[in-house]
Image (cartoon, rainbow, N blue to C red; front, side, top):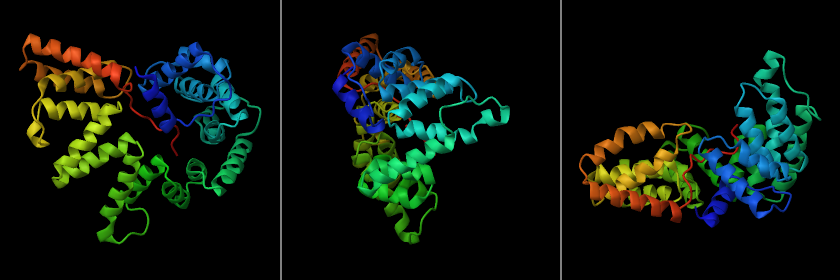
Length: 321
C-alpha cells in the first residue's frame, strides 16, 4: 500500500483532529485501522493502539467501531467519543448529542456521560459557528449536520466542501431547492462535477452514470477510471466489468486480463457489502474465456495494482444526518 496516497485520501474523507505525535508503529496501526473500517472489516485492535496513545481521530473511529458492535450506544463507545470530544472533535460531539434519539432511550440502558447530550451539541454548535463565520467549508457542513438547514449545506458547497457538493447534487435531484425545471439537471451535474474534481469518488460514479446515459462515452470512461484509481469499490468493479465483459458499451478496447485483475481485487472486501456477490457472479464469466497464462498475468497485474494504488474502500461518510 502506498502510505502517501492513503494519508491524502483519509484527509479528504476523514479530516484529522489528531492531538498527539504518534510513533511510527502507532501511525501504521491507525492507518491500517481506518483502512479496515472503510472496508467494513473489524478494526478495533488497530484503532485501539492509536486511540490509547491519545490520537483524537483514532478515538472517534474506535468509538464508531464499538458502537456498531451493539444495537445501542454502549459505555465504552461513549467513553471514546468523550475522549475525542474533549480534545475538540466535532464529529464525536455530534454523535454524543444524537444519543437523545438513540434506541438506548427506549431500552432505558443509555450509558451516563460526563455531560448531557445537549451540552455536547451546544459545544459543537459554538465551535462550528465560530469557524464557519471565518469561511471554513467543513465547519459550514457541520452546521448543516447540526441544524439540517439546507442554507448551511449550500454555503459549505460553495466554499468547496466535496461532501456538501455531493449532498447538494443529491438534494437537487430529489427536488429540493427552487430551480427552474430546465436548469435542474444542469445544476445537478454542476455539483457532482465540483465534488468529483475535489476527489469524491461517489460523485465520480454519479458522473459516470450521467455521461453514459447521455452517450458521452469519453467522459464516462474518464470518471469510472478515476474512481477506480483511488480505490472506490464501485469504480473498481465497473471499470473491470466494462473492460472484460461489455467493452463496447463504453467504447473500451477489450482487456480481459486487466478486467479480471481489477474484479479479483474485490475478494479482499469480505467484511460486508455486495462486493463478494459481484465477484462470484462476474469472475467465472470472464475466466471461462481466458487461458491459464492469461489468468496468471491478471494475478500479476492485480498484485502490482495493490502496490501502486490506494487501498480498496467503500468510502463511507464520516457522519451522516
